[in-house]
Structure formats: structure tokens, C-alpha cells
Amino acid sequence: MVLLSKPTAEQYSYARNCMPTTFSSSIPLVDLSKPDAKSLIVKACEEFGFFKVINHGVPMEAISQLESEAFKFFSLPLIEKEKAGPPNPFGYGNKSIGHNGDIGWVEYLLLTTNQEHNVPVYGQNPEKFRGLLNGYMFAVRKMACEILELMAEGLKIQQKNVFSKLVMDKQSDSVFRVNHYPACPELAVNGENLIGFGEHTDPQIISLLRSNNTSGLQISLRDGSWISVPPDHSSFFINVGDSLQVMTNGRFRSVRHRVLANGFKSRLSMIYFGGPPLSEKIAPLPSLMKGKESLYKEFTWFEYKNSAYGSRLADNRLGHYERIAAS
Image (cartoon, rainbow, N blue to C red; front, side, top):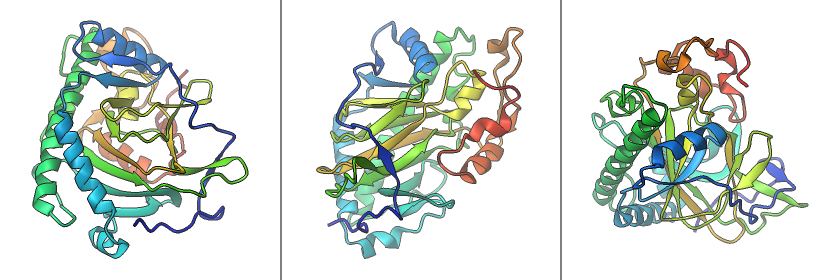
């Protein structure tokens, strides 16, 4: 039994006049086994900052086993789960997202992916959880690097690993997050929908998201409208992060997204955030400039991470680093 407090207007945010069950058919689809994958990825990153991948190479058994263990953890009594928290920065969190007042209808585990650190494990069978977690993260990191190298090829960058080397670096500041959105029968309030996780962009280079077959994920289009992403438990969804937007000098756009609570089914999503080493300098790649003016000031990932996590979710985090308005 999941114990989150009954939603009230004072605690949670609501999305007005949206229809999460009306799914968009325009989400770009990329088959990683096909030769046109790199061109489709570039097009999707330019137009949406978001796409769906199939034939991704992550075994379904690894996915389903880790999901099962995660559900077991989230079904524990709250007093047991809270032994794994509060997140500082890693561990179990409930409702509070970050330290700046953002609240969502969500509970989560935030974990490091750095193999030099001992990955904290939770639940009734921690060693099983640790093994499944490490196997899953290895497979997803491999897919992330494959996608990042296809991006570089599609952009005609000579150095194929210009993006992927940052994620493969031993000092890569990547994180893994498991979000659980309990079913919320009191979801609709005066035609509004409860926010599970508020709108934001991801600050890292790339995010790889996989969820169960429960709806809720929405992305924002260039015109500011929101579309609902059809759930697909066997596929992954890829987000362009702020750092990749800067490295491509705005050619790729980080996608603004959010999650709405579901009135009937709980949603569980597992997200790998591929980040660079803390000391890495983030700036537009010279090979993509070709005489163009840089839209962004150079910064280290450490600087941007601190700035991003010191802001509210919905803030334009890149605004402080723009030289001229990115169009």
C-alpha cells in the first residue's frame, strides 16, 4: 500500500484542460538496427528533442526483473522506504523534488551509476537488487553511447565518440532514477489533472527513459502545446538534455516534459541520465560552428549542475548562459 497524502490544491500542482488519454501519433520512431537511424535521430533531435527507439538491445528480461524489484520496494511500508532516505543526494524521496519547493505526486529512488562508488541497495533482497541494477545500467549506458555516436555521425562530426566519450568516462557524472507515481483516484479536480512531476528539461547530455504501460508522460512542442506520449513498455524514449543543446549550439533542443498522475494505474519509470565528468567544459563544438556565433557561454558541468539544481523545475536553466537568444 503506497502512502502519499491525499492531494490538495495547496500541496500539488494541476494541469488545466489537458487530455492525457489523447495520444500523439507524431512521436519520432527510430529503429536502431536500420541504416537510416542516424539521419532520423538528427531530425528528431532538431524538431522534438525527443524520440522513441526500438531494437535497442536491452534484454526484456533485465528490464522486467528490475521493474519487479522496484515495485517490491515501493510497495513496502513508508517507514521502511524512508530508511533509504532522505536523498542526499542519493536515496529515497517522497513528494519533494529537489530542495526548492517543487512538489509532485511521486516517490522515487535516485542512485549513482559511478562504479567506483558502492551503489546503495534497498528492499528485502538488496544483493539481488544490486545485481539487476548493475546489469541494467551497463546495458542502457551501452545503448546511450550507441545513440550518441549515431548523433555524431548524423551531424557529420569526424570524431565519432565526441559525445559518447563523456558518458563512458570513469568520472562521468551520470545518475539513475526510478520514479513511482501511485494511482490517484481523486485525479480530476474541476477539469484539471494532478502533476506527478512538473515540467522541466534535463540538464545532462542525454536521458533514456523506460516505463511500464501506464500513460502520463507529456512533451512540449515548439509552439508551447503539450502532447501525450503513448506508453510502450518494450521501447525506450530518448530526451535531448541541456548540455547537448549547448554542444550543438542550439541545433538540437532539450525537450520540456512532465508527467501527469493516472487515476487508475500506477506508473513506474526508470531513467538513465548520461552526464559528463564534473570538470568537463561544455561549449558549442567547433566542428558545428562553421563561422556561426556561439549562442552560449562556456561553463563546466559542475557549474551548470549547481545552477540547475539551485533553480525551480520549470525555470529556463540555460537562460543564464545564453549569449544571444537561441531561436
